[in-house]
Image (tube, rainbow, N blue to C red; front, side, top):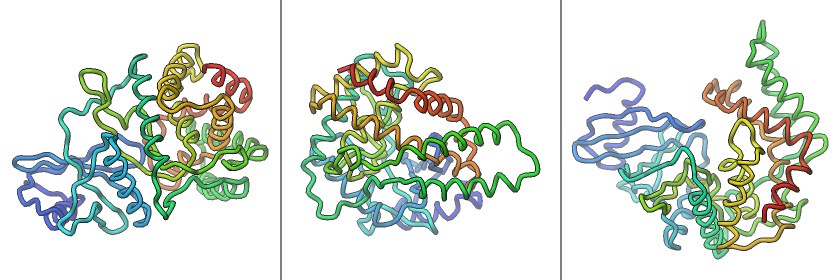
Length: 337
């Protein structure tokens, strides 16, 4: 096979760490916004090599334990292949990788119908019911509070890059508009789960959304993947996943999207019941976090990651609407159950 300089070290590492000697190709796989992963083909098999950029080894170890925990508790998670040293991750320079079997029957839907939404909600309920029983002595990665001062420091780093530009383009002006709006919002809202009565008492998936679940031909979820594994509140993940699954469109809180949220919540509630008060706390907490969420700006200006531009329009509309109508949004969603 022809190996260019970019992937030569990966080729050697896979041979050494996993004992796969008959590699015929390694190709970039660009689907996520933060990862740079690869499809690896050998003479008889196919694999998925996932990049865990800038993740501390302690966090990766916790993710590995959490993934195994969910697998043993009946959640259809995809486990990584162990290295020849029985490790789940291989480190190359500042980046860690995990090698997964490439599953031919993975079916990630671009759009979820009503039944899919209920099924997705039920699966998250099952994940959280299992996560409630997790008794790791080390809480591992947790959902950390974000204060005004914390977010201002992140904003300052990005602004230092923007201010050095000789002229601003349309994208710069759009980002600046979002930054100015965030500055106003973080004066009013801190992100702190305890403040809203939420307790970090569950092991959660950590990044549950449409792209991280697969459906079989009968409409059941056959795989759950890309777990981040956090110790957090289940309502943090329920509300975050609902936003990503149900409100990810140019008109976030349309009547159609609210119907989606209703079925998603009903699926979850049928497996792991909750109260309106708990949902309300989770919603206010989640949108407060979104006001502090600054990763897209950091990716674009500090890491030259242009893939995040796909999210700009939707993010701006979501931010503008919730900044003016947070109480209304929370009431509408809470009244769905």
